[in-house]
Length: 242
Figure 1: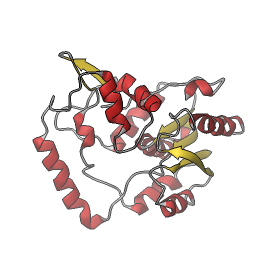
Figure 2: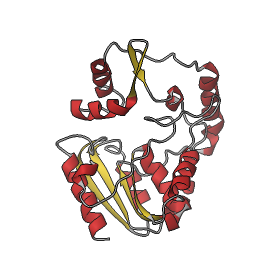
Figure 3: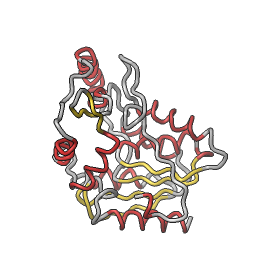
Figure 4: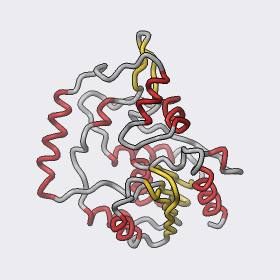
């Protein structure tokens, strides 16, 4: 989407465990607050504040960063996300038990193997969030690794583990309350909040400075050819006017 937004210098970060970035050590989980620390450490290397854009889980990370390091974030743009997944306090022990059980059974190099990259593209199209061929092929460019004449996923298999600890809704509200920069939230009509408009409404009301808009498309509306132009146009317009 970056080429569709003119006159901006774009830096795209692969979060730990994703793309070309290193994996966390054995026995380490992937916590949102660890991602937030990674991004903040990068922002400390920049002389100016930035516009922070995050999609899906990256949107949750971007929200945490905007709350924790407001002096580093000029503005916040979140794509099809309204913040971290939450749970009630009485379920936390069971959630952590499941996560630890998965960790104890995890074995490296035990993931699905494919004969061709084309097979990977088709498999990703039919994943948890459906994708068109073009969008899937873009993700595979940084997500595929050739190993012993076969193709495997480059990302860390531990990313599929359930989070060992989730915030409650009040905690999420507390973070949102600390976000003071201009914020744009774009939600996909057929995305992960299609049947959860109440979450979108209640959380958006907690922002001090927010523009919320629903756009056509699925969860990866910023990657699909028929919807990405509209997403890019909304982002460009928001930055230009703020």
